Amino acid sequence: MKSFRTLILILAVVLAATAAWGQTMPAAGSSLTIGLVMVGPYNDQGWSQANYDAVQYVTNKVAGTRMVYIDKANSADRPGTTVSQLAESLMTQGAKLIIFSSDDMADEAVKFAMAHKDIFVIMSSGSQVWKDGKTYQDLPNMINVMGRMEFGKMIAGVAAAMTTQTGQIGYLGPLINDETRRLASSVYLGARYAWTNYLKKDPAKLKFKVTWIGFWFNIPGVTSDPSQVADDFFNSGYDVVVSGIDTTEAVTEAVKYAGQGKKVWAVAYDYYKASEMAPNVNLGVPYFNWGPAYVNVVKSAMGGSWKSHFEWNAPDWKNINGADTTAVGFNKGGALSATASSTVDKFIKELAGGLNLWKGPLSLQDGTSYLASGKAATDQQVWYLPQLLQGMEGLSVQK
Image 1: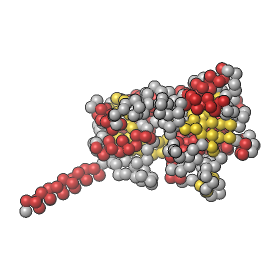
Image 2 (image 1 turned 90 degrees about the vertical axis):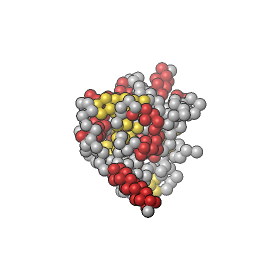
Image 3 (image 1 turned 90 degrees about the horizontal axis):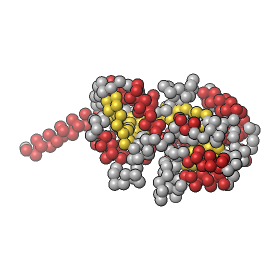
Image 4 (image 1 turned 180 degrees about the horizontal axis):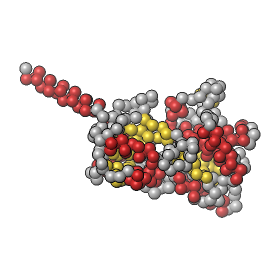
């Protein structure tokens, strides 16, 4: 009898815990401390700073909020410490909402969310709670937030194709995963579209190469040196280098070569103010604007309307650089010619009108069919792009 009662008690506890996990998260109320975990330095002029500035945007827009943060959350800068442990250190500073702001934190974000079910969690760039995704998990306290940077990267590709004088565009890539394959491929799609539709040139004469460094930014002794990768591009006939990493080496190396009298250009990435760097070589920057989405999520946490979901937010086509409305933007750089600038504007209008470059016929790098003629890619096909596209040079998977 005693063992039976014990069994009933255990069952009751399990059922109660399960019910609590399935309930809506209680409102945080009129004050909320937001903890931000960044993979790189908070002032990297790239991905991490874009997230840092976004949370500052939240604290300026939503009364009762404040920010605590930890940056350089990676194994090189903080060996022996996990990202979930770093997030827990923000909890000790009062954080009730934690933002994990890098794709490589996905597993640690899930671990943290499951261990701290009373803490609101935002996973930027992940897809764990996407019900139509391949890796869906039921995590009531997590929301995935991502911008449709594919559009920004296509715009970058147009800027690059309209500028190159050698027909060779280099892409400085971070590590290889679904996200980085689809973003590199988006640059190629934009460049190919401009090359064939605006410049009326043979697509076979457009050379597009991707070189991966192995992480989101340089870690000496671990990654390839992004400055050297950019130099290799410029020394071998590639006159435009498009950045896909968190930091600014593509632009700084272009400045160096331009100072030697070479006609070279670069496209920055991530951070809206990166377009202001080196106006003599900088064609512009596609950037994430996390602020508006973060504001909405924070308000839902404070007001009691929080609901776990996945969001993949498009640009505001009425104003892609609207600070309060757009998720993705493109700021032009000083080196963009008048002709290229007007073509970029034309392309943006076409995208706003429904132009879809993720449409067949398209093949993967190994020649297998990806999209049949006239067929548009689903969100899942784009998100989980298994290879680079045919016409691109570079690795599709890590060796």
